[in-house]
Length: 339
Image (cartoon, rainbow, N blue to C red; front, top):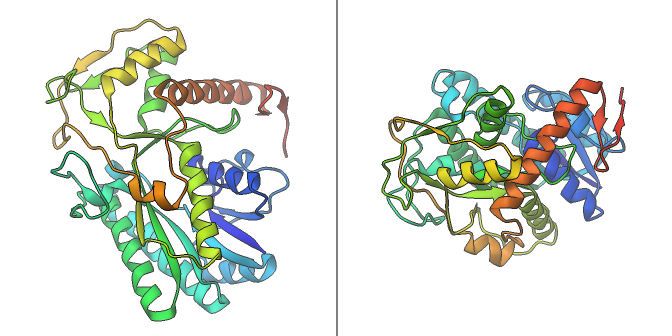
């Protein structure tokens, strides 16, 4: 038996795959490679290139690989872009999830871990976000993730599906040299790209009600997040009690100014960030409690801010070298070609 990881060739999904393998649990990857990379999938892991919207493909995959449960990471994850592409966002995140749940039901698969998001909260009016904080998503992306949670809840009531949804906050870092964040919208890749191009990174807003005037966010290491997916899957497989949702947050925050200072230290590139006006709607601080996840899902902050920045920087540099050489970089720094 194996677990299916949808979106398992992406930044977060590939770390989830590695975490399952580290625990000796078999996995199968499904990814359409719209934002993922086949080189992120280990050579010995079955990889199916396809879309979660393809119900027939899902049924065949479930039958061929004896899938026991699903970790659903695939989706359209760009909150800002979702405002311009709402129909695409709903198709990829809502219709696809419904298609997946229907195929699971038909195949007798009753366990799922869902990749949700802090975007379900919108702009929370509290210093510490808990799972009970009111939900008020402010983008089609955030709305689609909340609807995804509802789909799991309702299917659980109707069919006995066992499930949990993990609400991510700001996911950064890398757990392996050959896995990097390639999103064109995330903070770390944007800062690294600016430095690589000789541009000065910019901070949007320095007049927030925070210690250094820059907004505070909850940054978590992607490898820590991946471990909790495995813990959630184990809990579902064992039939143990599990909450319907968990925040994966640090309980503490880091300012954008602190991020910039750490980037300068780690990269050895001495720069003073440019200052621009704050973006409309950006709250001063968003920080979440991970108390429930710490109780149930082996959730803890195993990495410091320096670890997060350093691992992200090193993996991004390795990716540049791999692209230049036409190969894929391994943990030891050796490059190999993969068909």
